[in-house]
Image (cartoon, rainbow, N blue to C red):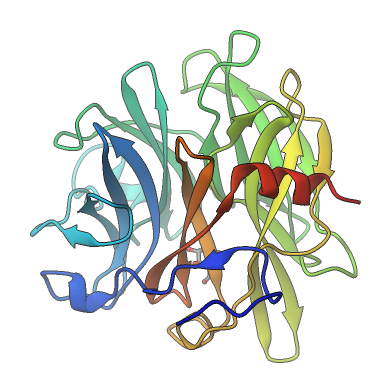
Length: 309
Ligand code: BMA
């Protein structure tokens, strides 16, 4: 499928979708919202898979080129059945976001139970053994992403609590990844724009000379439901609670059939990106809560687009 010029800022890969349930070696309902890392030159994508019983868990896909993936035979993280995490994961685990710090891959994800969504953190060094660290929010919070380095000596994260029905992006800090504080709201819905109903962090922040690049999702509510699009913002390197710039247009909107039609219509939803040595950025996104896709651009162009007034 050749790219249609001038419609969206990001370039959809012509082989999209890259992962569908046809690629999953076990029976499931959907696969979407995967988070990528590059480890020893190979690409890993931690996938949210929804089982036919209706709750989500994680599987792992592997690739040599970042476009053609093979999914492992068995899921890698299932909701806990025993122990202190289990009662907060009774409705599944969703939307992993991976951040690499000092040899450890931290996975922030949403633990879902009858109380609602909470943010949880797990870690792995090798994508073989996974260890849960802590539940780090009360219910009503999701879309947790960890910054890839400490800021002024503290871990930092973005998340999306809902207050008075309004979902905005907040920042908070921690010494140990378990206890979090100094919560501040940093990005709110942009009334009248494509992200007027709700905004949430999507990819873990990417450090650039111009600031922390945050690829986020924005929602507009229409007469036929919500439309999820992908946007970008730049946060101050020393004080990421300060927004330097925000895209007034989305980078990608649901247009292709696989983005418009699925279990949830009109959704493009990123959970991570890889920046290549040649400046290309690959943004991995779930489409219509039913499959996984990738779109690319040059990181420099994305920064200039975000800075453009
Ligand atoms: C959000 C998250 C995502 C999902 C999206 C669209 O709230 O739960 O996992 O892709 O809704 O349904």
